[in-house]
Amino acid sequence: MTLPLMRTCREVATILVAREDRVLSLADRLALRIHMAICDACPRFENQMLTMRNGLRQWRNYTGPDESIRTTASEEKKF
Picture 1 (cartoon, helix red, strand yellow):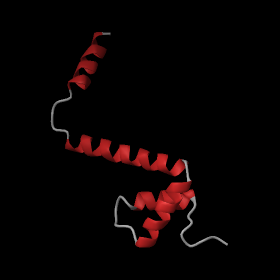
Picture 2 (cartoon, one colour):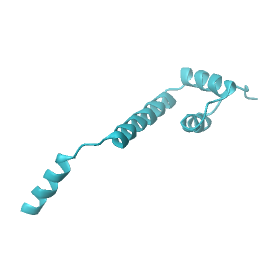
Picture 3 (cartoon, one colour):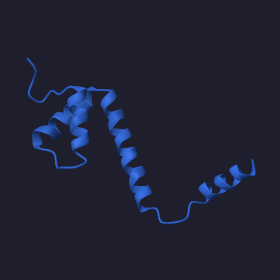
């Protein structure tokens, strides 16, 4: 028998992904907090998701020219 607030890593991953799109219920927030306190892998997965989200946000908000791409492309033409 499993406790109602105990979730598997797969379930926690689903909750972490869902958290990007909606506000979690109290039960999901509690289950997430409990699981994250006892699991080594899920906090790493959460950090990976946060890194991707922040990177995508920076990319989406980027407005300047990307000189490194132009430089690389022009350098490739030399060879």
